[in-house]
Length: 314
Ligand SMILES: NC(=O)c1ccc[n+]([C@@H]2O[C@H](COP(=O)([O-])OP(=O)(O)OC[C@H]3O[C@@H](n4cnc5c(N)ncnc54)[C@H](OP(=O)(O)O)[C@@H]3O)[C@@H](O)[C@H]2O)c1
Image 1 (tube, protein in one colour):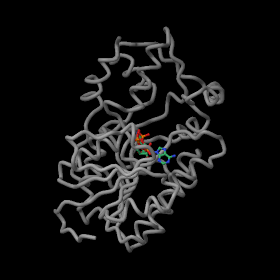
Image 2 (cartoon, protein in one colour):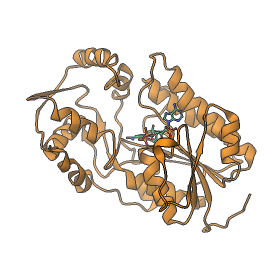
Image 3 (cartoon, helix red, strand yellow):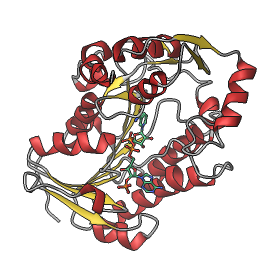
Image 4 (cartoon, helix red, strand yellow):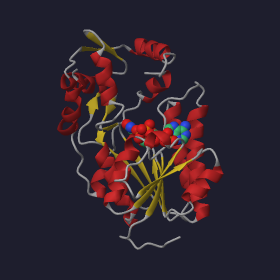
């Protein structure tokens, strides 16, 4: 394996690099002349173009240590972006497999292979004592990764609030729901607070950390410039997408009922686990390292979202 100096291009393996954040990150890494290998369970939907000669796809099952070992063997840097918002079952076992056991194995294999740097995506509110399977498993995953890597291999963990951008599943999902909801939109957890952060700022944070020793063994909380109540955000998305509705905040018992019903609708548009995650505000703490420590000025939702949401009127 090469031993690149601080500014030289690296060979970077990204698990979860086909997703919303992964697509933004790999484009950003290419600008720094890194070469990128995207690890995916299914390469077919992610066919690369001739314009992406520095991206390689490695197809396999991340539950198989052999696949991870082979795919990461020639990488200097390993990045884990894998995450799910809902599981197929209801007992938390899939969350634990994807958010806890996978990062543990990813870290162990990276260490055994002699990878030089590990970057890991967690979430704001991730904590082994959090109220939802999602946040608990994310918290346990970050702890497991740190334990595996110790002080031997420099890690950096990123904990973003909700992430927005052209292809996100947050603003676009609400825009889609509002479009089909006549008159009144019933909203669970309307007072939940969050600080949407632009996907390009998240990608920038990862990219700046690749070669910066100041980011070693650090955990960054990643937020946009403002925090909002969910109800304010949904009203804004409605106005911006041309589907203004009366957003009706549901009382807690109705929110729980809604989650219990929608959990069994195909696609799980909302679940009891989502409800439990929303009991915790997703906002950054001023006392924790964040985007400003990485020299990044966060982009406002209002500066970007109209550009893609206003096209959703038809
Ligand atoms: N988007 C947000 O608002 C937000 C907020 C906070 C934290 N995060 C975290 O940021 C990370 C990236 O989010 P994203 O929005 O980019 O997610 P995404 O678009 O859903 O992409 C997730 C990636 O994970 C892989 N993946 C999904 N399920 C998997 C499984 N069971 N086993 C192995 N791989 C699996 C997929 O890769 P393949 O299908 O190609 O294998 C996919 O590329 C996640 O860890 C997420 O929890 C996101």
